[in-house]
Length: 188
Image (cartoon, rainbow, N blue to C red):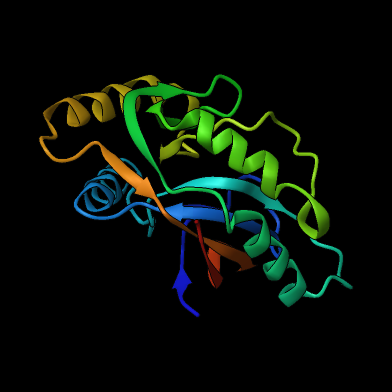
């Protein structure tokens, strides 16, 4: 079991004891994105990832090992796939700055639909939109300038812009800004 802090602030109302499924990016891409996020939002401790199942509550009676077993069964025959990052964008409602995905979105949507069932099924308040968060919880009057800084850094980056999703992590938010890896879930 690993420990990952995947958030940079209190998130304006995010609650603890939520569960999610994510796929971590490998370095050097992850290192670049984590360093960029630290430059844009100092004090955070990011771990670059793409979310497959956004945070959700689970019934207290839910057996976590059974939920993990279900996730493993659902992903067992899903083939690994490549994700390529595109331009830097801003979500209009939340002002989250993110890297859009230039490829791999169809596979992520199919994987999301497959896994969002059984014990972990949840109707999210927003439609599923796979992305890589670059910065969040920025004062509204600084969002455009911060996004421009992110885009300039992204344009200068000469490393890989894609990664393979071949495994995922089932994670739990156990305290404010503290996510714990509960289980690794391989694809294929």
